[in-house]
Image 1: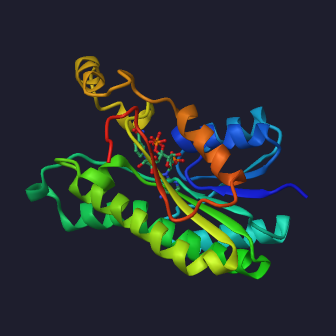
Image 2: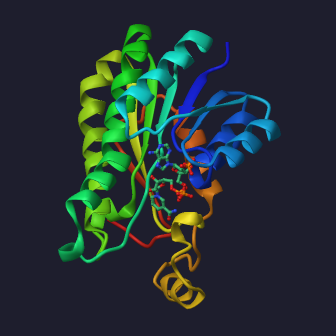
Length: 239
Ligand code: NAP
């Protein structure tokens, strides 16, 4: 039976590209989406092995229902990709409690919750792979994106801790920390701002969604990488 892959936030951007790439390799994908029904439907229609499921992954009961749907239909989940996320740029002094909870719930609680719901099925099989899509900003911090950076640093801490806890169950947990990738998330930047950013990147270009999908594609087949934060950023951040 094909490997079963759950990708959160797969209607657009990086998650969508990961879904398409793994579909081509013969994996059975469950592409989660929340608001972008039309894009999700199109993704399903244009690909062979993509099933779609609407759930707001910042809500426990919706995540629970999604995981139950997958288990009833496919009987297992081999690979989980926690990709869903939002971003917001604001001065730290302007951030409200509501902003805080919205960012934490969408970027961090979502991954905690989804991983917790999926893990029992991986532990039972003594096999699994979890990939968290974090960010360079979780590594080096970002002005006016403190809460976003906190969520991404939190994801990397989850990756490292879970890798230690789950290694004996043969479950690998890794983060991919992208630099700037051309998706809707960066539509807030104008042409000049993008040009300025490119000047600071050694490879002199913004990344493409396929750059991240290629790394996912390698990582799901690897057998000896766990607890790592792999940053794909054109050399923008070198640590
Ligand atoms: P994007 O184009 O804005 O897409 C975000 C995706 O997340 C959408 O499919 C959206 O689904 C989904 N999503 C958001 N909140 C959700 C929720 N509560 N439940 C379910 N789905 C939800 O963003 P992207 O650039 O592809 O970003 C993907 C991930 O990469 C994020 O975690 C982001 O932080 C990270 N990242 C991106 C960059 C970059 O430069 N683009 C850099 C570093 C890290 P709906 O539209 O269906 O609601």
